[in-house]
Image 1: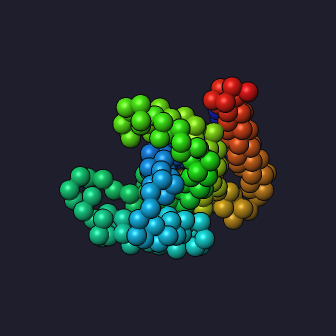
Image 2: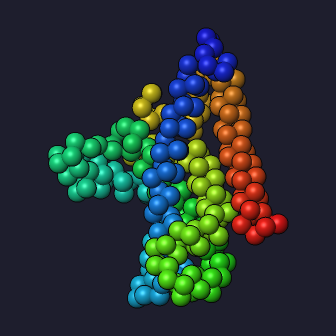
Length: 235
């Protein structure tokens, strides 16, 4: 088999770069929602808070295929949301990489949310109160006090979410299928390889690539979190 970039076959390189594209897009788009909902659940008390918390964590406990089917129903070409987006804005999620990113974002969101919320819960609210008594608005307090102190948790959440996105399979194949060059990420490429006679070596390389990427993301996150913690706390 011909080798391409980094000594990978065209099949492997295509899946690798698509996985990175999908995972990075999913993490970047879901991060503002992760911070927002973490702040809401950590700092506010309101009716239905437990229900909202359960709904946000639901993708963590239901089978990914269920999430994929729900996305297909709601965001498919004939879905309530997907049909409107397609007709009004010309945006389609079904059977393309944007749908894969959406599926990955939803599946990985609970991991990001939980890491950020736990870190935000650990921030001393008296620091926020002092900032507000000194004239800082809630928005400025959030950006100048809360988020900097929560940054280690944000980095951990991003790393966990990214690693989960790299491994997403069930929701992706249910919602956007296994289309070469469009939705065939590393897990789907591995699925294709193990169902192809004589592709055991290729399947092994895909497994190795996936493990290296996940370990790399976690290692970078741990290193960055340590540096941020030292800078914030002066240790």
